[in-house]
Length: 454
Image (cartoon, rainbow, N blue to C red; front, side):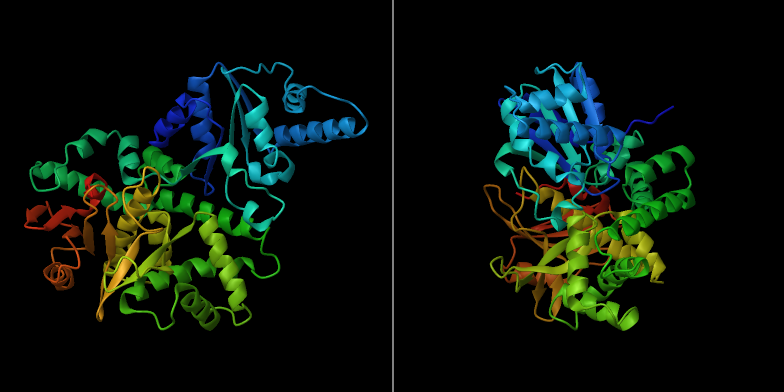
């Protein structure tokens, strides 16, 4: 029996379909996050007819072949009232061009020609179009044209903690959670146990399904290793000139090391310089700074790592981009931190911070809840605040966010509150039921998604 994973993005797909005069929908994201499964499930539920094309499979080869034949016919003088309709009709003679039909073109990054026809899909057909794909390829090929005005877009990430709970049938447990100590002891204990499982295995759909089917953490880690190998193998298509397979994997472990070292301060002035220095020193002196920078941009564009900015002195206007990097999945974070030989305490501390980073990053996506291009940490004298947040809601209040593993609290955040550099302090902690004391909020870290920045 196939296990169904419900995703919050399903509501965004439905909102797109119901929007008058909507454009072609681009569903993008990293590999293995469930884009294909999500859009096919949506199409089967919401449309009477579906045409699915995968440009990495035979169906894609057939579509591209029909496209080339059509172009050749037109060069030879043939005229068609609607060439785009002719293309889809040649591919599937049963094609009906109406609002009850959806055409899905998967792995769109594999064909420049098809991608660059998106504008005509939207303007010349009555049916709906959904294109899906990962970022790889397009960022490396200048022939891809950007048709932002003719595209609606949804970005898919790995399963959040809430979606993980939904998969396990525990969403009601999360709904019952009170952030400030008013839930039952069993609610806090069970959610904390589930949070630790999620921190270990992460949110890639294949990994979550493995856990649901086997209940085995070790089997989940094997599934995650397959995903890592897939990333590394695919990278060689685009970095044959600069990166060997081993060098690419070493970048992952180097990012993990910098996550641990980042709390103690970087020797270099930026994340990319620190990473380049570490890779060259510990793995390969043959890798240039330019090569490492290309690889960093690749990891970011591929949705594997995300950047955090840096503020100086809790000044929202002193933003500096790309000052730290986090993994876009907690399973990857734990996997590579474990490979580096970090202590269990260091791993849990970094994973907790990565967890809060991912929550804040989701709040930057539409509909936006907080300011800045990316989540940002802040310096305060010789010390740091894990994240500094400004709400975009009416109050536009600022928050010094500290991520703690145990029950300890941080004096730096309290000083920032006293100096009125922040309106509130938020402690996201393990081993707590939460509470409110003046302008200081303490919440269980696994409940961060329920916290509202006002």
